[in-house]
Structures are given as structure tokens and as C-alpha cells.
Length: 384
Image 1: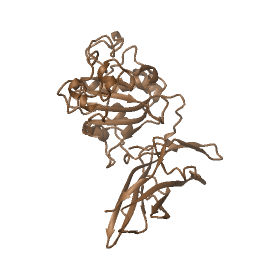
Image 2: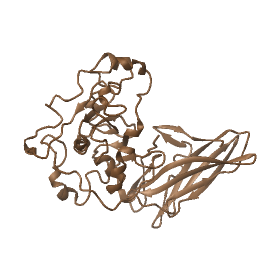
Image 3: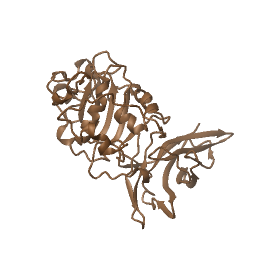
Image 4: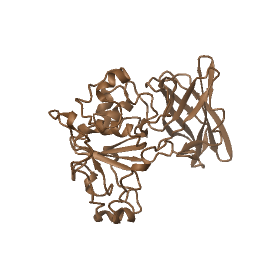
């Protein structure tokens, strides 16, 4: 589950920044970069600036630098399995997740862009093209297209080019991708007919091909998952979550270009890898809340004070921690009697200094606890 609060503050120097709370994972900094992509596959109808002009357009940066997009890491703060290799060779996790290279063993990939309640869909709303294989309507109608935008390929090397194209088309939302296009190419391939009722396809533009003659690698090839629909063999999925294998999938929140996306990576603080745990001692147990704080470049941020509230029976206690050199901030709550099986914990406030200025949540979310997709909920900690 990821938490994303886009809270904008301004101090009297008129500096603004965005606070992002995301239960994903600790971002790390990599200074080297892989020469990727290997060659130009950008066709005439691909959206966005010309790839060959990137050095002039972005300097040493990336087209997605400074955006609000961020990768969803696993519960241990690590990159998803198909992105792990890229995370060791690219400058940061966002670059790895948005550019690759992906490790799908040459079996291809498929991505779905779904609505993100915290991100304006812009172009996505007008170009949804599939329905998940877990409703009666989507099994009965192979062309029903209310759930989002699906696109894939049998070639791992096309991933960078499809992502870039759809980023600039402003098909904005939550990006979820998985390995395996053809049947038997993964544990849950697109062609199994249990994921989506249809899906577009991006073909590989080869090294020997004259790319200037390629109009659109997304069309006119007859390779898409069209007019096939959901496999009736899996109708027992109706009303249930799609049975996907998270081991071969990865996600990016707030995917897509926005003219209003003014995120400044130098003014962003992330609180990630939020973990809850408890320790047992005699007839009592002790709940803990651990988190990591870092900036958008992956540098651990020291000196951020986190304030959290725990509810123990009818009593409420407030405790604080301050992030250390490695960015870790650990809150140890008071002892809980053995007869109480769980407690609720909520993050109340974050305070840090930049120069002489205090940055605070100012109690704006004091009664809202932590926001999960727009609703207020707390984090339960169970007795060990």
C-alpha cells in the first residue's frame, strides 16, 4: 500500500516544496549510469521531444527528472525483481523503473495504466482500452474498455520507448507492469486471457531498420491482443482480484507528464519504508514505528522530527523521533499490557529545518492520521 500526500507549503522566502509520504522503500543513490537505451527506436508519431535532442533538451538529466512520479518498492525497501538489475546500474530507482532495462528474460512485458486518485488522468480518460478479467461484463464483451490503458510487447527492448511515448501522451495514472506477453512466457502472461480482455502492442524497431521510415510502432502490425477477450476458463475469477504474480511485476505512482507538475527534487523530502513491529517482554509488549527519510536524490536526511500517536486502550500517547545520519527514525512507544492484542498508530506531524525556516504540517492532518487513497486510517500494530 502506498501513501501519497501532495502537501505544498511556502515560507516567507516564497520557496515551495512537496512532502511525499510513501510506504514503499528506501531510495538509494547511484552515481554511475548505464548507456541505455542501446539505440534509437523513436518513431515519427511518438509523443514528446525528439530523443536525439535529449542532451540539448535535458542536459545530463532525464525527461522525467523533477516529476512527481515515484516507484513502488517492496516491503523491504528493495526494487521489484524485474527491475533489480536496472536499480544497480541506473542513477536512481525512478530512472530504473521508467527506463529499464527490464529483466523479463526476453519474454516481453505488459503494462496497465490505471486511475490514480492523486493524479489527474488528462489523456488517460479518453483512451482507456481494456477491462480486467474479473467482471461478468468484461468476460462477455472483449471490447469493453472502462478499466484503464493496456499495452505490451514480446520484446523487452521496447519498454523504454513505450513508456516515454505514453508519458508524453499524458496517459497519466498508476503504472503497473509485469513480465510475459505470449502464452507460457511467465506465471501470468497477458496472452493467458486472465488479466485483460484486450491490450495494445508495441513492435520492436530493429537496429538495421531505418527509423525515419517508422510512423508508429504501436500500430499497423496486427500483433495486439485484440478481439480475443478473457479466457472463459477463468470465469471463477469474477468478483475476485486478478491473480497476478507480484514477483514479476513493478509499479510507478503518479505516472505521466503534467504541465502543472512543478516538483522540485531539491526541495522534496520523502518518508518511506514505514514499518511497524513489536517486542515482547514478560507480561507486556512494546510497539515500534520505524521509517526512513531521504531527499529525491536518495540522500538520507538527518534531523527530521516525526511525531506519532498511539492509542492504547482508552489512552493516547504521543512520541517523537529524529532521523539520524542514515535517515532512520525509530519511535518506541510505551509498554502495552499483554491483555491488549493490538494498538493503532498514526503519523501526526513532520518538522524539519531548511536554513532558518521550520517546515511543518501545522497540524493539518492531525485528525486525519495517515491518508490511504483519500481516506483516513491508522496503522495497527499486533501483539507479538
